Length: 203
Image (cartoon, one colour):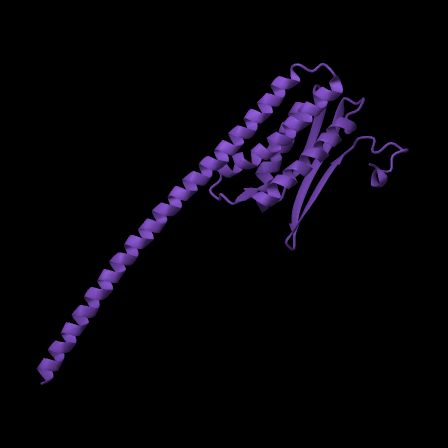
C-alpha cells in the first residue's frame, strides 16, 4: 500500500511538474511576444519623432523661402522669430529621437543646443559670452515644448535688446531642480527696460 501511495504521489508530482513546465514555456512565449511588441512600438515612436522633426524643418524652410520675397526688415524679423520658434519645437523631437527614453527630454542637452543655436543665428558679428549652468533635469514632452518656447522668447529678447548698439553681451541661462520644481533664470547684462516702460503694465 505504501508503494502504491508513493507511486501515486510520484505520478502526481510528475504531472504537476509537466504542468509547471508547460506554464513556464507559455509564460516565456508571452514575455517574448510582449518584448517584441515593445521593441516595435519604440521603433515606431522614434520614427514618429523623426518625422515630426523633419516636418517642422520643412515648415521652417517654407517660411525661409517666403521671407526671400520680403524686403521690410520688421517683417523679416517676424519670419526669423517664427522660424526660431519652430526650430525650438523640432529640437525637442530631435532629442527624443536620439534618446533611449522616448517619453522624457534631458533639459541640459536641449537648452544647451537651443541657446547656442539662437546665439549663433541672432548675434550677427557681436560677441556673446554664454554662461550655461543647467541642471540634470528630465522633462516630459508636454512640459519641454512650452519650456523651450519660453526660453526661445527670453533669449531672443535678451539678444535683440541686450545687444542694441553694443558689440558684446553676456547671456546667462540657469536651471535647477528644487523639491520637484524647476527654476529657470535667463539674464543679460544689457541696459534693461527703458525708463518709460513698465513691463508689468504693457499690452
